[in-house]
Length: 290
Image (tube, rainbow, N blue to C red; front, side, top):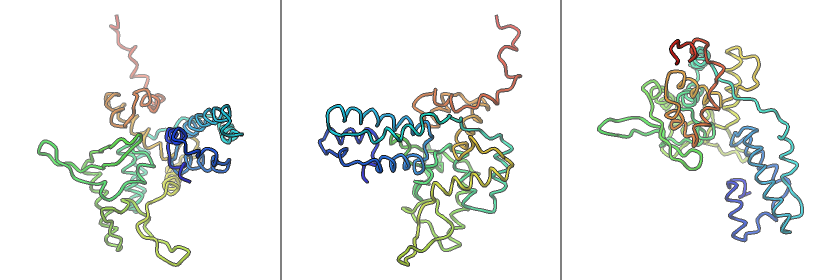
């Protein structure tokens, strides 16, 4: 249904325009929307609870003015109210290096890991990349390869790529050419290595990788590097690992926040894994504090 692809504000605006869409939305549609946020948009349980809570409040308003009879979002939000929030866990440098080493035999997996660990891009943003998202741009007489895409809140983001990063993407594109799967400008940048046949017998070409595939390979490689307790580990760990690593290397947290596209530096602070702070880093070791 159309409302699934709309943001919460879009639903409210539609109501103000008198489309009466809310009257047609069923409890099943509400469940579909929650599933869409969780699995397609890859949002956390905390974010899902917040989004659905807004709709619960809105539906209470619709009930109060007699537009609808029941709050179709009430039972959905209750499923996540008591769910414990598990912070996204961060990998150490050796674990990241092992993942890159183990994925060397898969051009696709290696490219996925490189993009996520080196840019901090969200999984949904990765899946939406096109071949023409990967371009060379010139600034002050110097050329840079960049990944250009639309992030949250319709922000246009450009991630500047280092030489190692560029080599991985170029190797992946060369591999796709070798197997007869040239990736054209408007095609998804990252595609499954194999095509599949639809029910009508036609071949499905140039389809993007799925969020579920990314989740699977992260789980697969986490097991390979001997992470036995998966709770807290996910593809989003790549983003929080990058944030933590940059801060630990001495990068200004405001610069890191801007690089990650956060509206508020507090979001960056929440992503930073403070448990990795060393005792030797304590500011209180300075003898001449006063």
